[in-house]
Length: 499
Image 1 (cartoon, rainbow, N blue to C red):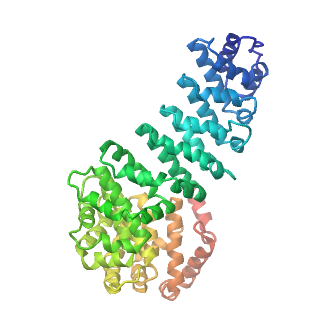
Image 2 (tube, rainbow, N blue to C red):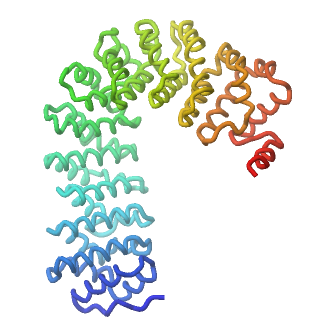
Image 3 (cartoon, rainbow, N blue to C red):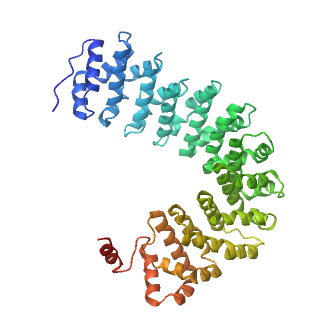
């Protein structure tokens, strides 16, 4: 039990002394409850708003407020009619610590069950307070306020408020402030749009996403480098890619690749975005791949062979998105077969991250199964190179993190009869299939189950002739039972061996 360490507070000094005593206690609810019996939240805010405290006393009150926010019982008391005037005064405090505290408090409320209280009530509402803080020049104030807005938008009815006309007017006006504030506002708009279609439409109509594009294509190199992250975020979800496609930025992006002095970070961003646009619509592919010497394929080869991992992975991702479309796959099969072979050979190379990226890339390509005039060449590539590489990687390479990708890639090839027959001729692979404890990770277990399910669904007649009746029945039971299924008695054997 705790003794009551908080004196009845009649002065600002009393409140600061009680706050310091509370901070020195263990962070448990009984201590907080005793403190609040003597010092209310309004008392604490009044002390913070006063000019009577020393810097050390103010810090004690700030620390006490922050500690109180760790309790759900307190977070529901932050936005009350009695607290609103103090919170509003705090958002305009010349002391950064006070503004940081208010922003942090509102973020904690936004993450709690009391979040809806920020949307309504007498002015200033919680959203009004956040809008004041989100444009604050101090990053430690603006960032938690921005995060709170992004958390809040998923609450029922929130888009009408968080991305309503009044809020958007404030956010638009903030674009004329410092680059730091401008980028924070644009990042907030992207997060709002990711969480809500309604908020996305509102931010798009307000020109916030066009502002992201404009910031990226600026001549100001420092702003451009900051905008790289914003553009990548815009291209990271379906609504954003759709907006970029409608903005017809592909030619401007390609032009960025033609600048010999272009920053590597910008090039990697452009390559990622062009891949996303190609995956979104095949209409872009022909423009991006007119010839092997065009800017994009030239850059893909350069990045793939380069020393920087981010560039290598961006090259593979873009290549796979292009090949997920019929025209893109035909281009690499017919126009750049050597590069296609080089990419595929990486599966058995020594660079594990590149091997995983290529397997994931081929999985994406095959999952789209684009119908092309080059089907015979593609099937030949799959059977003679891709499949043997995938099997070799699975059976011989020691990297556990690659195994889920091995299995997923094999599952996408399982619909080809020739591929199915070829895998089952490998004795060590058959043994692996019937070892129901061969995988250690959940992702690998799921991947293996996907392969066996795809194999039996497409070619049960082939599998039934290769395996003995009991083994085949166990495989069928495995498909029905799921990734963690084992034949009757097998678990007992495993348990005995483990014991």
